[in-house]
Amino acid sequence: MRYDVLYPHKYIFDKKTGMQNSEIFVEGDPEGDPEMAVITAQARESSSEDTGYSFVHGRITGTAKDVFLGRAWKSSPRVVYSYTEMDEIVHPGGWSSNRQPERAETVYYGEYKCTGKGATPATREKFVKQLSDAEAEPFLVLDYVEGTKWLLPPPTKEMDAKRIEGNEVYALAMCVSILLFASIVVSQPIRADKSQVEAWFNDIIKPVKERGKTLDPELVEAETEPRIIKVMQGGGGEFNTITKAIESVPSGNAKRVIISIGPGSYKEKIKIERNKPFITLLGDPKNMPNLTFDGTAKQYGTVDSATLITESSYFVGANLNIVNTAPRPDGKMDTLCDDRGNHFFKDCHIRGTVDFIFGSGTSLYLNSEIFVEGDPEGDPEMAVITAQARESSSEDTGYSFVHGRITGTAKDVFLGRAWKSSPRVVYSYTEMDEINGLTRKTVYYGEYKCTGKGATPATREKFVKQLSDAEAEPFLVLDYVEGTKWLLPPPTVPN
Image (cartoon, rainbow, N blue to C red; front, side, top):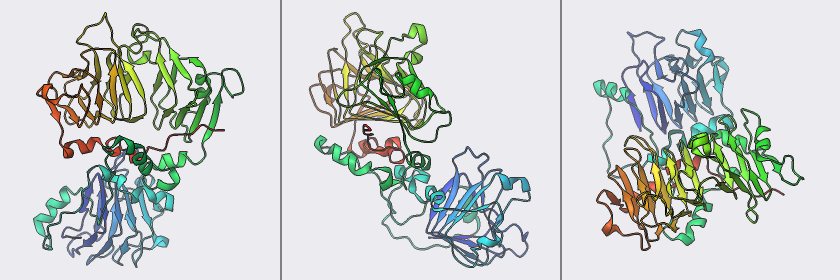
């Protein structure tokens, strides 16, 4: 692929883009400012913004002289060139601080294994990074632009090559936000045969050493030296409560901490703060610990009444029974607040009566059982599994249940209700006992190849979608929760 651009000043500008195997052609402008032959003007304004440009296996050529690879149009641009062939048209310094020396402290300009007469590390400005393998890796994967979620193979119809000139170039430069590529690999959908699901999962979710290039860099680093803390009620561990173990983890923690919990019942109100990422709570699958508390909404508020609250990133919980013992029946209302961010639940048992999976999370539930408790004293129209809180069709949130089972003692159970205006919930390959369906008109309620006496498309409300293969596929891949970036195999019990 080729770009022929006739305006030599800042002709690639915007927020986040990846380009692969592309030629950047810089035209000379004899009447222009000799210091303004600049390829990129990336517009990141803070180091906390996750934007930037990554150029991979490209070529920089043209008729201009002393071309800058980028200039600090905004305060904190991020641009990386990798495996790029640079002709001698590139300025020896490579990059410009835009005549604002203070921006040399805030830019992120990187080069990695570039070649050609214009690739001269020895003459580059001091603020330019010559990246290590580890530093370059995040810019060399499709996940840099979340490509596994939206990229498709190139169209098959052959197109004549066309030189882009004049106003066409200006229009293109105004909105450039593309990735040019040869081929890609996307996540495979969850298999229809439930007996093959475990093999499917294990094929994709490999250990860190086998898929470091696709994982978040901070996660890869965190998993290199995990710390193990043992909690035992009767002694023999470092702590006798889970809370004390969590308190021992420093704020800003950057390493995986596995809190191995011994058998027994732990009556504690447990909270993992936002500033303590990479924590795992791990029980023994043969003798799972019980985490219990009797918090009520009246005393703590709905969300804060939870037995376990985790606000941190990269949290893992495995082989645990988590119970709020206050309500009757078990679970009752608002059992699981599934809110904010991407979540993955596998092989879980979740029970409740009313809205017992609720919130605005983006979540995939795989091979999990939903048990709906009957409440003889409750409203018969309020046995509801989900209350997903999406408020606009533009929000990319929702719940996807795949290869699960819905059962229980309640009658006339609703799969979901429109607590907020635009909930999105999809059940696929789900075995449903005799239940009712979905309540109230909403934006997106879907079912796909569900089975059982409760799976009755003919009696569903008109607003419920019976999904086609193509409509269901986005809800059947780990990329629905960006899982290829952060999901790892289930932890094992340490010796």
